[in-house]
Structure formats: structure tokens, C-alpha cells
Image (cartoon, rainbow, N blue to C red; front, side, top):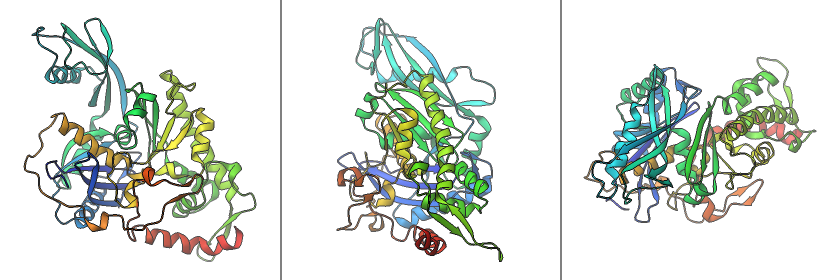
Length: 458
């Protein structure tokens, strides 16, 4: 363990879950997870905090679970993910004329150029969340990735500015503050997810990150190493659950369980003679649900989400196979069966599942390497980016905190299997292993609900 690095904590306030993960980079520049906790989220809808009290309660539950997983931890400052319908983005241009043209361009001048963009006019009621520099120019030299060390009179850049509703952001900060935490920074969720699931080669080849969460689907498009576009699509996993609930006339919990257990994003792949039996309510007869009908509902909503992705790709002129890296699906919703095939069909681009193993150290439990935690792990990486570029103040007295046994992968764990793609390689998986009994209650509930009917009909 490298105790010369700070411990950074990511807090993902999602529509279906709130997660807290503490991490520190080791001597190999990989992320060691030092603490992990999660809780069901009840106060958040479509990525926005609507019930502050419920959100505070869930943050505290996740925080306490994280602290319980590693009693050596002390958590005060957190990097927080932000999403929701209110998120917008715009492109702008900024230039500065240098004071001392005899010297090389420094990081301080770049920081000043970025800071000036926070004065950009935006509609009343909004505030700037982040300013991301794209390609730079120095005098007559164009498309410079990093101008530090260059000489010149004028340095400028194109910027991608992300804005959000002031009140929505205030609700996030208030919830975090009342949970006795301090928001170190707010980070757009698709950018955090991108950090977790991509390497430099992905950025350069061109890739669209599609983070399918509970309340929103977040999109970030990169081309030639530059962030070209971000968007928040107002449909996600919860909409699929609601469609199943309405379309098949079942309870919400039953709809969610059916989606997870039997849902498929391709109706053609579903068995036409397979049925799920749902127990009747208060003496009512049991209901039989066609697996084919279930798949039709899931496919219809997922196709709509992917149509939005295609629309945004066309907006920035990056459809028609311009993205060699294709589409990377992450987030909890990416675990739907046959979603890769549907994505390739709708977008015309190659697709894969993005797991947050790119920057994770080996030997961690399987649970942490699920796409569900891409945003949270990406938030820690964003914190390290700030630390390494001296963007924020970090405490200098670093404590020695070890990875707890409960977050380590046990020896001799079998290789994970993927239904569609066969064995998942050790390298790709990054030594994942499930949390002991973490999902057992949930899984047992599903088994009790469906096992008898599945044996009977499937």
C-alpha cells in the first residue's frame, strides 16, 4: 500500500442506489479500494434529489456501511456525481494574450484560461458545473493537445461547458452537507464513468460511453482524445420497470425482478413458449406472463434510448462508423441480456460492456467490478486527476490504511462466465469476486418467487 497518496472518496447519488467508495492509488498507479458501502435510494428521481430527508438517510446508510467495511477509514470530503434532466452543455472559445512571451507556457496560464470561462453568460437559474478544455491553439498552431512548454504570444482553446439547474445542485450539496460530509467537487456522471471504463487508446480511437442508470442514461462522446459532446437522456432502467409494470399488470417489485431475471433486449431471442407465473394477490388467481411479451416491452424502451444516442451522434457528425471504438455500455442497465446486439443493430457501431477494471488493482471482490459502480470509481479517479494536477488542496499527512479482508478476492475463485461471450478473461475481469452475502437476500427473494414457476414452464 502506498501511503504517500491521499484517500479519495466517491459518492454516487443515483436514482436506485447510493454508493460510497474510498480508494487510494498503489505504487503501480492502480486503484486499491479501501472501503465500500451502498444503500437503496428513495429520495432521487431521474437523477435529481427531490426528497432531501430520504436522500440524507440513504447517504448516511451507505457511509456507515463503508466505514464498517474498514474501521481505519475517516471520511469527510467526497467527490459527488451529478446528472438529471437539467444538465445542459455548450461550446465556447477563450483566448488570453500572454504577459511574458519570452517564457514557455505554464500550467498557471492554462488554469487562468479555464477559470475565465466560468464568467461565460448562461441562463438565469443555471450554474456552471465544469469547464473542459478541448483542443488548444498557440498563435497560428492549431489542434494542440497540451500547450505547456510551447512559446507564443496568444494561447486559446475551445471549451465544453457543462451547466445545471442551481436549485438541483443546491439540493445535492444540502443533502451531502446534512450527512456531515463536504462536497469536494461535483462531477458530471458520464465523465466519471468514462474515466473508470476507458484507457487512453479508447479516447483516441473515438468512443461513445452510454451509462444506463436507474433514472437517466448519460452519454459522453470522445473523438481523437477530445470530449466532443455530453448529454443526459431522460430514460433509463426505471422506465423499463414502469413499462413492464403497466404493460403486464404486475407489481413494481415483480416488474423489477422479472426484468433482472428474465428480461432480454431482443424479443427474437426470447423463447415463445416460455412463461413466468406470478402469484396472485389476496386470493386472486396466479398470472402467467409470456417471456416473449416481456422482451418486447424491454426492447421497445431500450430501442428508444438507443435512438437518442444515435441522434446525439448525428448532431456532432460522429455516426456512420466514425467512432472506431464504438459504443461502450456501462451502468446497472447495461447488464440486460442481448443489449450489445441491440446496440449494434440500432447505432450501426460495434458495442461492448465497459467494466471499471481498467484502473482497478487486482485482487478485489467481484462486486466492485460491476458496471453499476463505474460512476463511483470514476469519481475517485477524477479526484486523483485534481490531486496530480494540483487543482485542489489535499491533506498532506496521509494515513496508512490497508485494504480490508472483506474487500479482497479469495484465492481459487472460479473464472466468471458470461452467458453470451463464454469465459471472461482474468485480465478483463480484473480479479473480480462478489461481496459475501451482499446480494443473497435479493437473490433468495427472486428464487423463492420464481423457481417453482421457472422449473414448470421454462
